[in-house]
Image 1: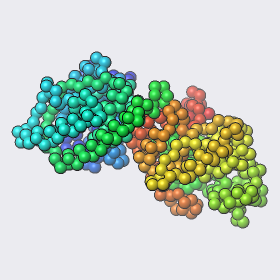
Image 2: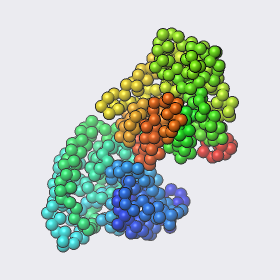
Image 3: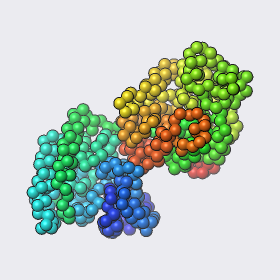
Image 4: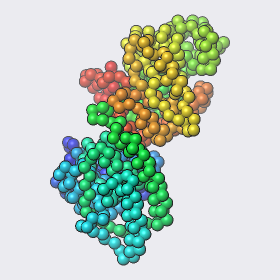
Length: 554
């Protein structure tokens, strides 16, 4: 059985799917039968690009019927485009070779023989070419007009492609392509086009990296006659994309990628505010269990910290830090012991009042040291192993507090401190002012004063408010290869307790939770050249077993 889940497959077959319910069941059955009969060992990856018809249920039934075989699926929360779906599958591929084709099997599966033959002969990419002399078409007489509309227009478009972007390639848009996986994977993070132009961008990226591309004759079926009007509109958009690809190529974006061999970076997806409200606690717990969140920091000083501490203590395989608090809830010490930190009711000051008092020199560092020491002690007393320190609303980065309080605490407890010097991008039309200020604060406070190395290069303020895959992509594109970054996130399910807490960030928490939990976010991280990791070192084998098998901190 060549779809066995034992060992590593020799090849990966990727099937992007969108609203294919009318024929998907037959496609899946035919694909499985063909791959199972081949001499190589294969895996099948099905990528559902947020279909709105019966495709989802068909895929789920197919997976259930063939449990235990090397068949996996992704399902997106929003329609991202064929290019993004295909790249997601390529990023997951474990085979030495990767092949993808259109879901309607317009290119019969028998064409795989030629693809695999050329790949084994040394080609880096093998692409179907419908205009080679030995290619054959199967078309209904009622579709002959098609040859004078879309087909001829397609040839015109390809001529423009050859002139502007991919010289020497006769057929860029054929929906059957195969690759040497080790060659294609490094370029995935450099690609930005998610629609039908992704084929052209992919081929240009391979040409820029001097990949060997081979075109092969294929058999091909014309079963339907698409809309000429839609094709004209699509062609105009693709012409715009061609200019963009050419510009990116001239700038060297495809030659220098974010994922050179051996330089895969780490991305800590770190959730703040664990303990602020029940809905936040639940979202973080679910994220840690599913793997969409890889680290969290505990906020004490409110009524919902105790459940968070109990959960963290009962789940030692996960990674936890201390979210040092001066601006939410009440101090752990008696208010009389920390009078510079509280208001008349004995509660912490809100951030604006705290910053004003700090600017006036009325915050006493010794009181901060005592209160933060008490918070660290309370979390450790609950049985939680801590891997790092950070703070609510980043107040530990204030120069006076960083140097005189945060660094000594980190040194005493032998844990690293968060810094916020990672990438930023625009938030809509406006710059990320908060992110830029945190970078300045880090550069002002940290150099020459941190006795311990930073936990990672923190970032994430650019995602707040309206988190999106597009913003996440822009941020990761600005990250340096081979480094470890901490994406600071705030997932949550808004509830009445969050509203009562006075915290002003509510709607964005649910949007962040949905983004982090999506298959497309994980695909984006993977293709950008990052591995999702925790802040702490791996557990030793004995403690990993005691913690449940997937530990991440000491």
